[in-house]
Length: 85
Image 1 (cartoon, rainbow, N blue to C red):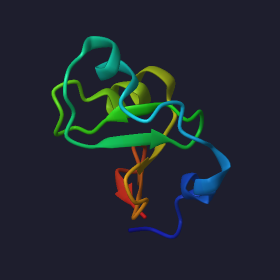
Image 2: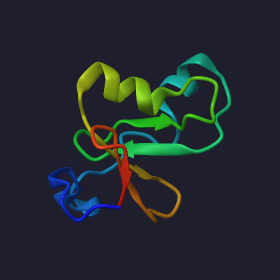
Image 3: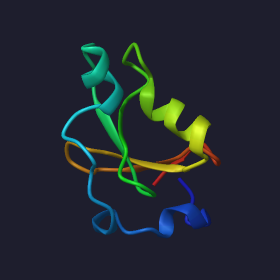
């Protein structure tokens, strides 16, 4: 964990989730294990333990680097630095 990552400066309450579940899994009618929310745009995607890995795909497509766990917000993940905060 690093206090140096500038990507972790964004507040969790600044961006609301776009949906209650993974946007892509809902469209595809596929299950997810856990969901993550993008702190840049509010996109909700499934975690890497899910078949779709939509949170990671969202980062790869957009460059939006920080996700949080939707269920209880215990941590943030920075895809660029590969660190939790």
